[in-house]
Image (cartoon, rainbow, N blue to C red):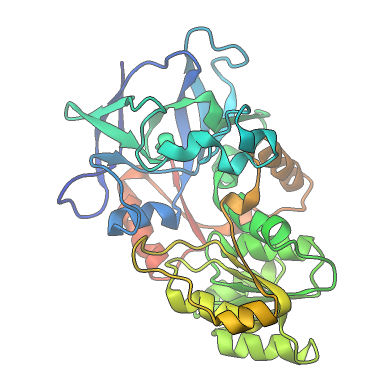
Length: 369
């Protein structure tokens, strides 16, 4: 049994509660990880607000990195001391989606919001009650127990307090531009919402060779950071961004608009749809309320202008392939990670970190254990 502490959602609670947690020792195909750092992603706050329905008690966190402290029996390929980045999406390597190069859609992801293993079993308890793990990894813990399907080994000289961002935010944003929007050299791209995801969509669009990378956010600080990592222009609202995109494309509009707002609203997709050219693409990466956030666009324009609306989960990345690529890009100076981390926090400061996120003070906050 592993005794540790972590941030938990409880029935009738208000935000995250840092409490004692008990984990089982790892079973076959599992490892225990002593966490080094965890990013404060907006998706965990969606569990707090109820936009993402989760069972209680529920242990948060899905973007993290750490060091293996124990290995389950008959689990070859891993040893104590290995450094790992968590992937919030598991990859079994055997299902139709993994075999098709779409590991982000792996069938093992079906239980991510239940927080159990595939057979419905739990690995953690809080006050004697079985507790779900966010994305089955729960990185808001000093220690956690995870399936080997959800980790990627990295060299021991990789700084885990920076590389933790590769488990969600970086791959989701970067891939939304490179994979889902299929950005090409010379194109015009709008990124709507500059947080931990949008800032990396800016990086991805820039890496793909977009001529105009237009960042949109009402917070000036976020627009300034976007311009430091690849945005060529920035605006506080979509109307101005759309007008600019049209002005540099002979009136046509953006080739792609990537929606990475912290809380997706129906009007965000509508505004993005208006901003793109004929045969352009809207990539919807942000998450809103599961019941109320809708996609509403003119069907006439959808058909006759041949526009496309594309959903994006982890930026259509395959974690076991793409996380090592991103590590190499970071080491080579091509991918910025250090610049994305605005503030670091202790585990006990987690609610302060989310308050800072909501008030627009952070690109990404990180818990350092």
